[in-house]
Length: 80
Image 1 (spheres, rainbow, N blue to C red):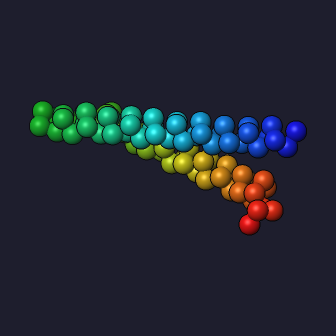
Image 2: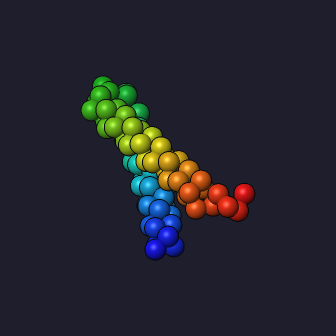
């Protein structure tokens, strides 16, 4: 059962990493769209979207760090 729980934590960590990279990509996309509108009158909704995805990226990065700590200190403590 411990093996299954460890694999579940690792799967959650991989999922958090994938979601963080997706959020980072969306953040860069919305920021590029906002920069493209600077010449014609900046659309601040695009900057708001970029900020939203930046916050999502930080949230998933924190979750990834927490899952890495759980994996390291709960499952790999005897190997250190």
